[in-house]
Amino acid sequence: VVQEYQETALRHGFLTKETEDLKQASGSLKELIKELDLHIKKDFHEGFVKLKEEFHNYFRIIFGGGKASLQLVNVPVRGARDEEEVEYEEGLPVETKEAEAGIDLTVDLPRKRIKGLAMLSGGERALTSIALLFAITAVNPPPFLVLDETDAALDEANSQRYAAILKELSKKTQLILVTHNRETMKCAGILYGVTIGDDGVSKLLSLKLEEAEVYTNR
Image 1 (tube, rainbow, N blue to C red):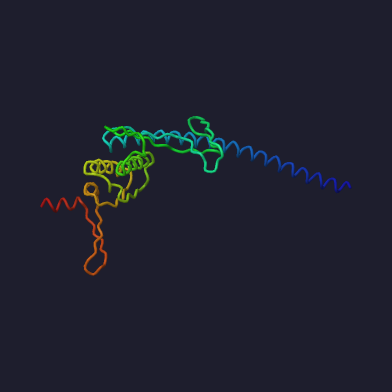
Image 2 (tube, rainbow, N blue to C red; image 1 turned 90 degrees about the vertical axis):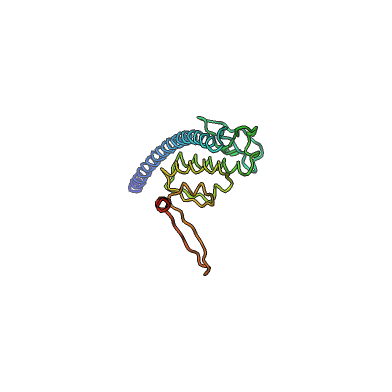
């Protein structure tokens, strides 16, 4: 009995120590999670404020005036019985089971009484999307960006503004553009074209505009 007691006491002491270690690890993890959540909320709030500013600036450049804004809203979850108002903490929505955070976009076009995205034409929506895309790129510049005919709905005046913005963005990001727009082609450093000959085989052509200017000036 004495031997069994000693073995059981030793086992109990070991398990007690392990339990205390687990409690300390759990407390440390909870503190770390809490700290990371605060950092994430802070970084998200700061990034969202910068995104709003850049979106407004690019919107004014593309449309020649007007206003544009982004707002955090609560979106009811599908299947929820009742819609509940979302509480906000430090300007950010607190997640609940009945609703989740979303973003609402409002615009005010110059010389028009349009303040909703649903009232915009197809071309105006395309321009607004371009402004938002450029704003995201300006806040957090990626190493490269691929744009596939984003300028298809632009007229000549807007194409010139679009090309000017691309030149500015190209200082921080390598841009790969798929386009048929001449104004966009003018701002490119290198042009690549695909053509098909009589033999039905596709061929790739490349042209550096700087070299082309030298040849044309001769």
